[in-house]
Image (cartoon, rainbow, N blue to C red; front, side, top):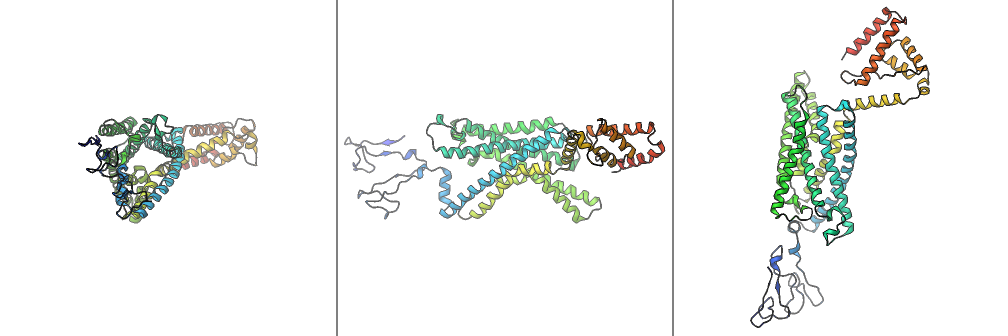
Length: 476
């Protein structure tokens, strides 16, 4: 309630007893202020506006207006803990960090889409380990997309300028419900990402340290835990925030990440990352002990263990611990704040790029599948003229590479001339053959058998070559 007093003379009372300069009197609005300041703008007894200090006033000076009651808690913190120089540095750090984030989000977006497409398209890659990677990448992709949409929306919101009517909002940041929903989904998919990182850590620890899984576990329990638990977790946080605000939601939930209720989300996330750090240390210990048991030098074993751990860091999200630890700038730690902000932004926003590169683009299994796919594609789309070109056709090249006789190669060339060529890829490593490669190998072996029966070389001539070929195939 605001107060305006009518004195015993029937006049509106001024701020001080006996002051009637203002016929409307003085209304006490200080109960509405965020901070209890008595004066907004004071008129001195001499008739001029008062300055902030006693000597800062005069007939031509506008005086000092106290706007501090309009400041938010964050602005008040900045005014109390930063001077002009450190505030300028903090603002520059924030701008540069946002540019760094835009680049990282863009690179992560492209790399995650490619990696998800590869794991989804090739059936040979749909093993349990890769399916864990796939769902982790999907969660990361959703976070990247939502962040990019919100960042770009903020740019358009700044260009449009302030608005007074929420019904006239033209951007996400100015539309009620839509803005709150976007931030809810952002926090949900962030929680999903942390949860899948934790599931990756559990699976890896059980597989390497304990050897629980003699066969591949079922994906359904992991799927329900990876998407269901974060949904309950995020809805619980939102419900607590709404209760605190009496279900009167501020625009975009206000500065929710600075409120103590945000620890409902960040606390379990940090616990998951700390446990993953323990998993990594445990895996290093086991790998190092196994390397030493294999009569390897301790230095080489240590290097292999460290290399394995470095590859696990982005997958298990350990660098994200920096994002969950609050670090506020002050005039004394501004340079540490700059280094912390740049490092946290790089490790978090580029995580999608690092995970896609390590576990997809540079993965030997994935590269082998892509090379086999490309080789089949080239063979299927070559014209007969291209196959006949040169002194040696593609069929004879593959025949020589697989150890078949010149007679068989000539047979294949004759088949090429009649348009009945069945090209087959080179021999693959053990355990990496797909159904197409096996079918082509069976076709070649059948042609060799028919060739022997039809008089193209005796059985005695063919046996040593075939035995050698079998021996080379069985060798590790």
